[in-house]
Length: 199
Image: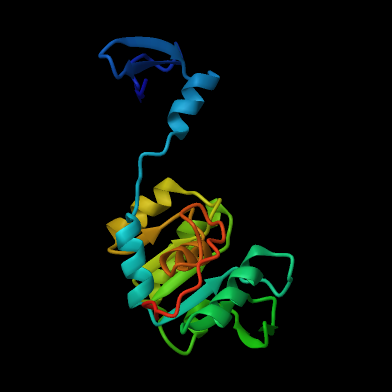
């Protein structure tokens, strides 16, 4: 059953009250594994599937922050897919690289030749707030944080500043899924069609 935490005891006791979904409450040590688990529960949701599809459909340009020139990295694979399977103008942001996939790499978002519609982020969760500040500084509207990366406070902060935030989702999987190439869970559907799909 779902539970929420509220501070209810003096700091000396180091206890917190857990409110259960059935209305009952109990106290647990604030440093217990259960307390840590409850604190880590995700409550932020983000755009639903239709909204994510609209984001991808309406975008014309994507900047990949944390892009890597190494073919072993996920950002390289995503960059390859976007260059080969979409009409997006794709920009790579990495201050340590000169080129990625044959394209110029930029040291930061402020150096890009245009404001990208989507900033796709391959950085660790603790870096997301600073990336959001960089996105706000250039006037971009959407931050897309890649699969496996989560910072709920950063997502809430970004939304409070007017950004659209997608988090813990792979832009490659989402784009392919919305265009008939992947099942809901990212598997190849084997679908072949002569009908042109929306970009």
